[in-house]
Image (tube, rainbow, N blue to C red; front, top):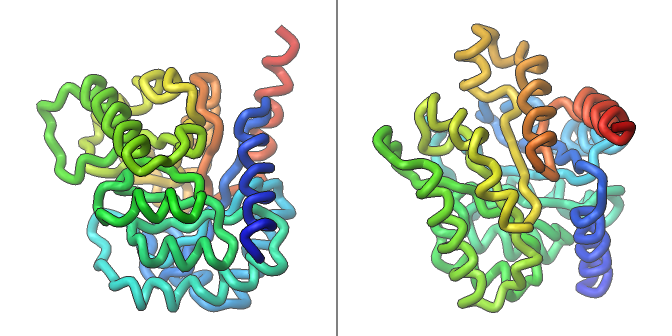
Amino acid sequence: MNRTERFKVRDALLEDLAGPRVLIMGILNVTPDSFSDGGKFDRLEPALGHAREMAKSGADILDIGGESTRPDALEVDADEEWQRVESVLEALGRDGPLPLSIDTYKAQVARRAAGLGAVIINDVWGLTRDPDMPRTVAETGSLAVATYNRGVIDPALDLRADMAAFVAETFARADQQAIPREHLIFDPGVGFAKTYEQNLKALANLDVLVDTGRPVLVGVSRKSFIGRMTGRPVEDRLSGTLAVGLKVVQMGAKVLRVHDVGQHRDAVDMYCQMTSYR
């Protein structure tokens, strides 16, 4: 995919993000150790098959990750991460039906992914872990998901105030690198450097992000706080995930990042259909 074609995909996605539909981002982990589906799609053919299935089931975006971000996961270097994602990105960037997102906090991986057609950089460290990431976002013209992630749990934190400070800092960082504000997407960072209660508070205070006017992405699919609430194992958390998803859509979330694409597509479409008849 050349630069002109990539920008057409990006700009079409920007139109979708500004439109009335809630978008579904399908998770494609090409990792051996992700908490829910590690090892299932870490080879090319299973990964491409799963991507096709998610597209068929109603995904709007595919988010490809080559390093697990679960709390106790081992870090991998940029070369290994790139080896995991390169062939999948190359195939989907050439022939895939959907816009691509790269789930990485490493600027080197993000830049290479953009070269193969990825139009979103989904950085779980909010553009702060790699000092070169803001410049990479700017120079590649990518959209960027900035995740609220302090890195260290602080149970005494005034979470709402800290979320607001994160927003201000993200906008300042973007302005410094001439990243258009319309290229930013915010994520409350459920599961990242938060206590159980703070995960719930981050969702309850989603308006802090929604009120920025930028799209808000929420990723809670099968996460441990749902397991703690329901007592369900990771493979049996769909109902809890759907409940959270519909609630945050009601609160203004624009994108849901999920494993179970078809079920979320149906639930969100049904919810939006019902609310249109008020």
